[in-house]
Image (cartoon, rainbow, N blue to C red; front, side):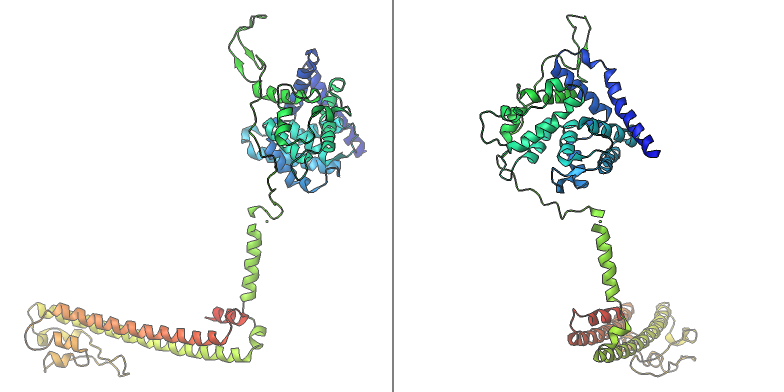
Length: 466
């Protein structure tokens, strides 16, 4: 029941497009060439194929795998419907949101017209070459680009046209005039292929374009360049007065137009691009993410990998032990640095007191804790909790020579510079200790890396651990 209803809808849609075409009164045009071109132009616009450029159409063929199929391969109606739907969906992506088309409706119209052109029922099949010819002729774009694409389908690897393929092209393209009831004027005949090129034994691209785009193309294809000219001039406004109807302006043809001459192309075809390995940037980003995830998973240390190499396990234990010792030493150095900074703060207060004119013995050393501790010794710092009685040298016992000299008896020096010298000495000492720690770490890692191959999985485990 559902299948019968579907067939009824298909037949209704098929009849609708021809009914609409008859309402345009194209049969009143006396010249069959113009009449055929006007009817096909109506079909082209009715299905919105004039909005699809020929290069977009070729891209749709490749996206749907038609370029990899033999030209005589049959296409089912379901696959043809998928291809046409894809063409209109891609068209909507290029159009502004205010000019979107109805994909389902246009797909039904075009599908029904193509089936009618091949005189098939709703369950019929079309060949790949038939689909390519009909869609590339009815789509938009320049005529020279359409003919170049058609020539690529009917030529050999040396760039010469194959006459049997050209005859096949005529059979398919002349189904379009027949579908709009112009078969008596432009129906297919067996002698058409040879009559198009009667003198030439070898037809190359430029000769093919010159013949089909000339002012007098082959009689069977004379409607093809005229269809292109209709599309180019149908919106051209001529501000002149008609001598017959006295209309002040006219649209479309005014005088016979001529397609501009095409550029000269190389006689031998260029080496075709190998598009088999080209993929979209997105099926690429996903592959990169998968490879990255696999790499991270392989780099993760597992107990099985470590246990496979006892020597590596022993080296790792030694490195961890060495790392703990170095971290403990670093902590001790940080504590010594903190104590030295406290001592430097006390010296700053003494300097300010001396600059104010008070003697070091009458300053306020009781309120300033003066930890005296050598970075290399482990002695406990002592605080000056009473008033010094032996001069500045006693209160600065255990401090570097630069600081003692700054507060010593004798000629007055620039105490601020001497204090800066003492601070630089502390900083340099700390820097050398940090460099020593870093050198020890690098030496340990280098010794293990020389034992393990850098490209092995064990090296990855070592890098993860540190």
